[in-house]
Image (cartoon, rainbow, N blue to C red; front, top):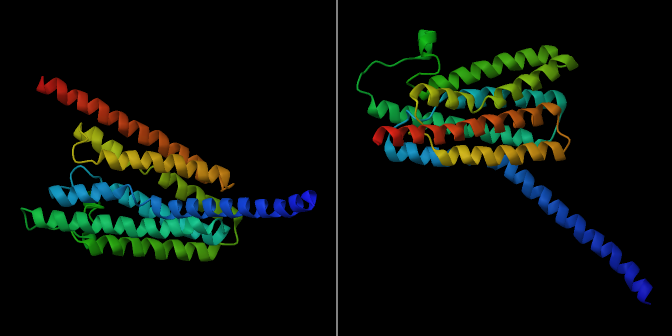
Length: 249
């Protein structure tokens, strides 16, 4: 009788374990989809509060928009986890939200009536346009160009892998514009440290997720590169805060 009861109990235990793992898997997927946009909430709030965009590099938005548009087409060619596709859609919407805020703040604070537009085709002001619609138009044109290229070369495995590699290389450079802007300004003032800390936590989680789910190698290599850049930016926070203390002293 005891053996029979034990035999009945074993499948129930296995079912509970499977249910627990499935719940954890769903939770991890949800974090992957939405977690990438969370770091920008502190920066968004800081820009709204101060009315100043100088500490935030909008080229971060450029890097992430290009990376995630390319990743969507990579998904069409390689059909990896749906979670990563949804993550790209959420990230694109987040970057447009950040650009919309930056344009609104800059136009509100603008002293000169001179505005720079995409239609001017002036490379000096590339990605420094005054109107939000110009950013949307550029991304739409880029998307159409990549879509046409993908349609022509979708049967080429080499092209699909190159598309994925290009996407993750861009994503790996996520923090690079911010790193360079901090170097130029010799300051991290106006940059949300919370944003960078959340970048770091997110990139560590994301890289572990890629490894555990046997995602394409491009993804975990990208995550590792992002972690290194995140750490470099955090070191800048320490370095420039020390410089500030020396000057004040």
